[in-house]
Length: 120
Image (cartoon, rainbow, N blue to C red; front, top):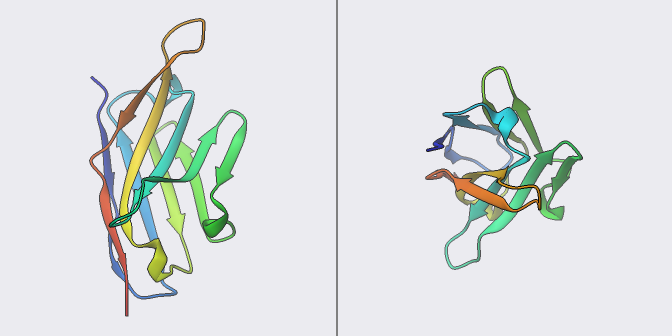
């Protein structure tokens, strides 16, 4: 069973930075894509950033401030978050997609999440 464990969340002032990490129990080369989602109170889960062989994608609200990256040697996904705003507050979850058959069906794995709080 794949396990994804996030770390790096915390309390930070507006304008500050945090770096989130997601450690995988299996080789991340096996995943077709990995992503960071966030869940804010009272809001739907939102895709923040995604990385795959096709490149990276970001939600408009974080473009230019967040950077997603993966270290295959360490089996780790990261999210560098700069110029943080109060609206970035939420639980950040790591997601990994695994292709299970030749038709391209995918199985998704989730971490438990790490809390990010941005306030003065």
